[in-house]
Amino acid sequence: MYFIEIDVENCDGCMKCYYMCPKMVFEIKEGKAALFDAANCSGCMSCVEICPSMSISIRQI
Image (cartoon, rainbow, N blue to C red; front, top):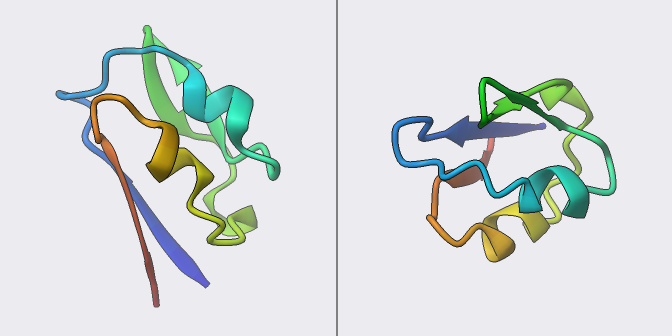
């Protein structure tokens, strides 16, 4: 299981995480990334790697 954290203050709303995530973990709320289904995260790190503002972190729990 993975814990995803989004730094909403730092997020620029580019939506790259939304489009890149193969598990559809993210949604966009008020122009910022938000978690839609965090329990579905496979820990692939594609969102972390593509985030230009480095607003997403994932750790295994």
